[in-house]
Length: 218
Image (cartoon, rainbow, N blue to C red; front, side, top):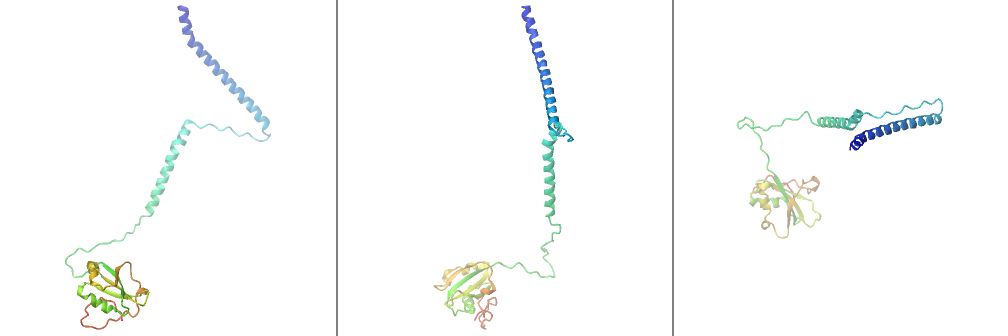
Protein backbone atom coordinates (compact mmCIF):
# COMPACT_ATOMS: atom_id res chain seq x y z
CA UNK A 1 0.00 0.00 0.00
CA UNK A 2 2.85 2.35 0.77
CA UNK A 3 4.33 1.83 -2.68
CA UNK A 4 0.99 2.59 -4.32
CA UNK A 5 0.67 5.85 -2.41
CA UNK A 6 4.22 6.84 -3.34
CA UNK A 7 3.49 6.16 -7.02
CA UNK A 8 0.27 8.20 -6.79
CA UNK A 9 2.10 11.11 -5.20
CA UNK A 10 4.86 11.04 -7.80
CA UNK A 11 2.46 11.08 -10.78
CA UNK A 12 1.69 14.86 -10.71
CA UNK A 13 5.39 15.64 -10.40
CA UNK A 14 6.15 13.51 -13.43
CA UNK A 15 3.47 15.30 -15.49
CA UNK A 16 4.86 18.70 -14.48
CA UNK A 17 8.38 17.66 -15.44
CA UNK A 18 7.12 16.41 -18.81
CA UNK A 19 5.36 19.73 -19.42
CA UNK A 20 8.52 21.69 -18.57
CA UNK A 21 10.56 19.54 -20.93
CA UNK A 22 8.05 20.06 -23.75
CA UNK A 23 8.11 23.81 -23.18
CA UNK A 24 11.90 23.87 -23.38
CA UNK A 25 11.88 21.81 -26.56
CA UNK A 26 9.29 24.11 -28.14
CA UNK A 27 11.31 27.22 -27.21
CA UNK A 28 14.43 25.66 -28.66
CA UNK A 29 12.52 24.74 -31.80
CA UNK A 30 11.25 28.32 -32.21
CA UNK A 31 14.75 29.72 -31.78
CA UNK A 32 16.08 27.30 -34.35
CA UNK A 33 13.34 28.23 -36.84
CA UNK A 34 13.95 31.97 -36.35
CA UNK A 35 17.69 31.46 -36.88
CA UNK A 36 17.14 29.56 -40.12
CA UNK A 37 14.64 32.16 -41.40
CA UNK A 38 17.06 34.96 -40.60
CA UNK A 39 19.87 33.16 -42.37
CA UNK A 40 17.76 32.52 -45.49
CA UNK A 41 16.51 36.12 -45.60
CA UNK A 42 20.09 37.42 -45.51
CA UNK A 43 20.92 35.25 -48.51
CA UNK A 44 17.86 36.38 -50.49
CA UNK A 45 18.00 40.12 -49.71
CA UNK A 46 20.43 42.09 -51.96
CA UNK A 47 23.44 43.69 -50.35
CA UNK A 48 23.11 47.33 -49.43
CA UNK A 49 19.38 47.08 -48.79
CA UNK A 50 18.52 47.39 -45.16
CA UNK A 51 16.03 44.95 -43.82
CA UNK A 52 12.78 46.39 -42.67
CA UNK A 53 12.24 46.17 -38.94
CA UNK A 54 9.76 43.57 -37.88
CA UNK A 55 6.33 44.90 -37.07
CA UNK A 56 5.56 44.80 -33.41
CA UNK A 57 2.30 43.29 -32.39
CA UNK A 58 -0.04 45.84 -30.79
CA UNK A 59 -0.32 45.72 -27.06
CA UNK A 60 -3.56 44.94 -25.30
CA UNK A 61 -4.01 48.63 -24.52
CA UNK A 62 -3.56 49.58 -28.18
CA UNK A 63 -6.07 46.94 -29.25
CA UNK A 64 -8.53 48.29 -26.70
CA UNK A 65 -8.11 51.84 -27.98
CA UNK A 66 -8.47 50.70 -31.58
CA UNK A 67 -11.56 48.59 -30.93
CA UNK A 68 -13.43 50.81 -28.50
CA UNK A 69 -12.30 54.41 -28.38
CA UNK A 70 -12.06 55.30 -32.08
CA UNK A 71 -15.71 54.59 -32.95
CA UNK A 72 -16.79 56.67 -29.97
CA UNK A 73 -14.59 59.56 -31.06
CA UNK A 74 -15.95 59.38 -34.63
CA UNK A 75 -19.51 59.28 -33.35
CA UNK A 76 -18.87 62.29 -31.13
CA UNK A 77 -17.31 64.31 -33.94
CA UNK A 78 -20.17 63.36 -36.27
CA UNK A 79 -22.72 64.43 -33.69
CA UNK A 80 -20.96 67.76 -33.17
CA UNK A 81 -20.84 68.40 -36.92
CA UNK A 82 -24.52 67.54 -37.35
CA UNK A 83 -25.55 69.75 -34.46
CA UNK A 84 -23.49 72.67 -35.75
CA UNK A 85 -25.00 72.36 -39.22
CA UNK A 86 -28.47 72.25 -37.69
CA UNK A 87 -27.76 75.42 -35.75
CA UNK A 88 -26.75 77.21 -38.94
CA UNK A 89 -30.18 76.57 -40.45
CA UNK A 90 -31.97 78.33 -37.57
CA UNK A 91 -32.97 81.87 -38.47
CA UNK A 92 -31.71 84.42 -36.00
CA UNK A 93 -33.81 87.35 -37.25
CA UNK A 94 -37.39 86.14 -36.71
CA UNK A 95 -40.03 88.76 -37.50
CA UNK A 96 -42.35 90.04 -34.81
CA UNK A 97 -46.06 89.52 -35.52
CA UNK A 98 -48.80 90.59 -33.11
CA UNK A 99 -52.57 91.03 -33.27
CA UNK A 100 -54.11 94.12 -31.76
CA UNK A 101 -56.30 93.46 -28.71
CA UNK A 102 -57.55 96.88 -27.63
CA UNK A 103 -61.32 97.28 -27.80
CA UNK A 104 -61.16 101.07 -27.55
CA UNK A 105 -59.00 102.97 -30.04
CA UNK A 106 -59.11 106.11 -32.18
CA UNK A 107 -57.94 103.95 -35.11
CA UNK A 108 -60.32 101.78 -37.08
CA UNK A 109 -59.27 98.36 -38.25
CA UNK A 110 -60.71 96.21 -41.00
CA UNK A 111 -61.75 92.74 -39.96
CA UNK A 112 -60.78 89.61 -41.79
CA UNK A 113 -62.66 89.33 -45.09
CA UNK A 114 -65.03 86.38 -45.39
CA UNK A 115 -63.97 83.48 -47.56
CA UNK A 116 -65.39 83.36 -51.06
CA UNK A 117 -66.36 80.53 -53.38
CA UNK A 118 -67.34 80.50 -57.03
CA UNK A 119 -69.36 78.52 -59.55
CA UNK A 120 -68.88 77.89 -63.25
CA UNK A 121 -72.18 78.66 -64.97
CA UNK A 122 -72.41 77.50 -68.59
CA UNK A 123 -74.68 76.44 -71.45
CA UNK A 124 -76.67 79.67 -71.37
CA UNK A 125 -77.84 81.47 -74.49
CA UNK A 126 -74.85 83.15 -76.25
CA UNK A 127 -76.50 86.59 -75.96
CA UNK A 128 -76.84 86.35 -72.14
CA UNK A 129 -75.11 89.24 -70.33
CA UNK A 130 -73.52 89.71 -66.90
CA UNK A 131 -76.28 92.17 -66.09
CA UNK A 132 -78.97 89.58 -66.79
CA UNK A 133 -77.27 86.94 -64.65
CA UNK A 134 -76.81 89.41 -61.78
CA UNK A 135 -80.45 90.48 -61.98
CA UNK A 136 -81.49 86.85 -62.02
CA UNK A 137 -79.60 86.26 -58.74
CA UNK A 138 -80.82 89.42 -56.96
CA UNK A 139 -83.82 87.67 -55.31
CA UNK A 140 -81.35 85.47 -53.39
CA UNK A 141 -80.22 88.61 -51.50
CA UNK A 142 -76.57 87.61 -51.64
CA UNK A 143 -74.20 89.56 -49.38
CA UNK A 144 -71.60 89.65 -52.11
CA UNK A 145 -71.71 88.91 -55.84
CA UNK A 146 -69.06 89.16 -58.53
CA UNK A 147 -70.21 87.93 -61.91
CA UNK A 148 -67.98 87.83 -65.00
CA UNK A 149 -68.48 86.32 -68.39
CA UNK A 150 -65.64 84.01 -69.40
CA UNK A 151 -64.49 82.60 -72.66
CA UNK A 152 -66.25 79.43 -73.80
CA UNK A 153 -64.98 76.71 -76.07
CA UNK A 154 -67.73 77.37 -78.60
CA UNK A 155 -69.64 80.51 -79.55
CA UNK A 156 -72.94 78.65 -79.41
CA UNK A 157 -73.34 79.24 -75.67
CA UNK A 158 -72.23 81.65 -72.91
CA UNK A 159 -70.30 80.83 -69.72
CA UNK A 160 -69.94 82.82 -66.49
CA UNK A 161 -67.86 82.91 -63.33
CA UNK A 162 -70.06 83.73 -60.32
CA UNK A 163 -68.35 84.44 -56.98
CA UNK A 164 -70.13 84.81 -53.62
CA UNK A 165 -69.31 84.59 -49.92
CA UNK A 166 -68.83 81.04 -48.69
CA UNK A 167 -71.77 81.49 -46.32
CA UNK A 168 -74.08 82.09 -49.33
CA UNK A 169 -72.65 79.39 -51.56
CA UNK A 170 -75.37 76.90 -50.65
CA UNK A 171 -77.92 79.21 -52.30
CA UNK A 172 -76.26 78.64 -55.67
CA UNK A 173 -76.29 74.87 -55.14
CA UNK A 174 -80.05 74.64 -55.47
CA UNK A 175 -80.84 73.10 -58.87
CA UNK A 176 -84.41 74.44 -58.79
CA UNK A 177 -83.30 78.06 -59.30
CA UNK A 178 -81.42 77.41 -62.56
CA UNK A 179 -83.02 77.03 -65.99
CA UNK A 180 -83.28 73.55 -67.43
CA UNK A 181 -80.30 72.53 -69.58
CA UNK A 182 -77.69 74.86 -68.07
CA UNK A 183 -74.57 73.54 -66.37
CA UNK A 184 -73.50 74.60 -62.86
CA UNK A 185 -70.38 73.31 -61.11
CA UNK A 186 -67.98 74.59 -58.45
CA UNK A 187 -65.07 76.64 -59.82
CA UNK A 188 -61.69 75.83 -58.27
CA UNK A 189 -58.56 77.95 -58.43
CA UNK A 190 -58.07 81.56 -59.42
CA UNK A 191 -59.72 83.10 -62.47
CA UNK A 192 -57.05 84.26 -64.92
CA UNK A 193 -57.27 87.47 -66.90
CA UNK A 194 -57.05 85.69 -70.24
CA UNK A 195 -60.13 83.65 -69.30
CA UNK A 196 -62.35 86.72 -68.97
CA UNK A 197 -64.51 87.56 -71.96
CA UNK A 198 -63.65 90.89 -73.68
CA UNK A 199 -65.92 93.95 -73.29
CA UNK A 200 -66.68 92.83 -69.76
CA UNK A 201 -66.50 96.29 -68.17
CA UNK A 202 -69.76 98.24 -68.51
CA UNK A 203 -73.08 97.33 -66.93
CA UNK A 204 -76.28 98.89 -68.25
CA UNK A 205 -77.42 101.74 -66.04
CA UNK A 206 -80.54 100.55 -64.27
CA UNK A 207 -81.91 102.08 -61.03
CA UNK A 208 -83.25 98.66 -60.07
CA UNK A 209 -79.83 97.07 -60.27
CA UNK A 210 -78.28 97.53 -56.83
CA UNK A 211 -75.46 94.97 -56.92
CA UNK A 212 -72.31 97.07 -57.23
CA UNK A 213 -69.96 94.06 -56.92
CA UNK A 214 -70.88 92.49 -60.24
CA UNK A 215 -68.43 92.30 -63.10
CA UNK A 216 -69.58 93.53 -66.48
CA UNK A 217 -70.38 92.44 -70.00
CA UNK A 218 -72.37 93.65 -72.95
